[in-house]
Image 1: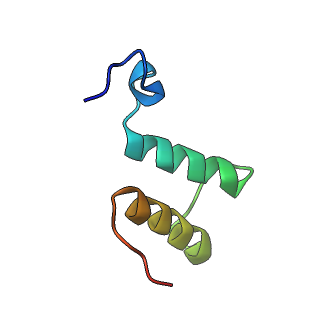
Image 2: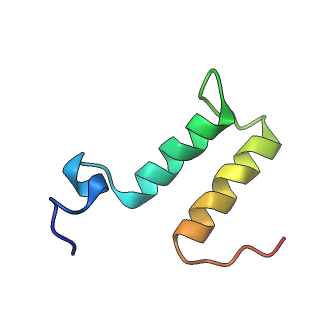
Amino acid sequence: MPDAALDPCARHGVEPWEFDVLATLLRSGLPYVLCAGDQDRLADLLRVLLVGLGGGASA
């Protein structure tokens, strides 16, 4: 595990996957929420999370 002083996520008490979710919500724009009914944006979030976990999303 990287030293917390060198790892921005650890420094702020955020896991890397949590950062991915927050970054995706930020990119989605106001109001910074994703709903189950918003299939396109929800698919974007899932793609980011799968890539972040090392899974290859074929598109």
